[in-house]
Image 1 (cartoon, rainbow, N blue to C red):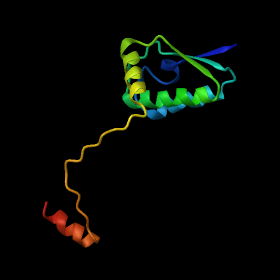
Image 2 (image 1 turned 60 degrees about the horizontal axis):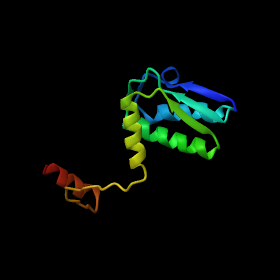
Image 3 (image 1 turned 180 degrees about the vertical axis):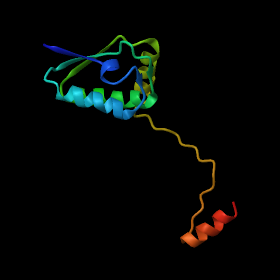
Image 4 (image 1 turned 60 degrees about the vertical axis):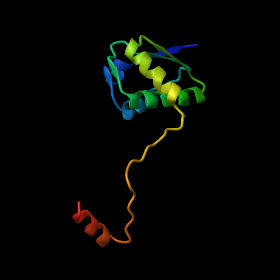
Length: 117
């Protein structure tokens, strides 16, 4: 089986910050004819939580398309971020609301309230 290696630092950047960047990886990966993909994290120094979450989604979608994905050369920070995000995906999040919800019948009432702040 042929394997395609994708070097993240060359395709995207050494600092992975956004979901859009992870989606770029998906676009390149989904279009390749090879069924085996190696994602090379050489020279990647930073990965945001949002990139990591979207990256997990990309891997999930590639696996649905019957592609195998192997990650190599992740530094410790990248490995930890991917582990934390993958362990927390799908878990219900508790949202704490500390404020009071106000309802207004119209914009004029809202404007009057806002004038008091």
